[in-house]
Image (cartoon, rainbow, N blue to C red):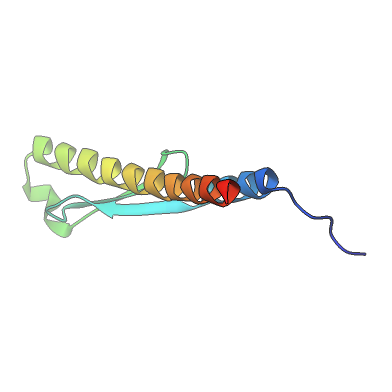
Length: 92
């Protein structure tokens, strides 16, 4: 028995669900912190370099904020790209 044809909207929903369960990783510019977020932007993990204990907590906090922000931007870019492709395919 073959699977029925899936509508573009159903395919988009499936892809968006897949993106939500994926993880996205980024580092701050100095490389002090690395953050991993899921497709909803929830922080899954934060890792640090070994030198983190020698740094001012404000510097560490800013590194975490920057890494989390960059990972969230990456997740948003992937989702936006998917939606853009779906809209352009639909317009074709």
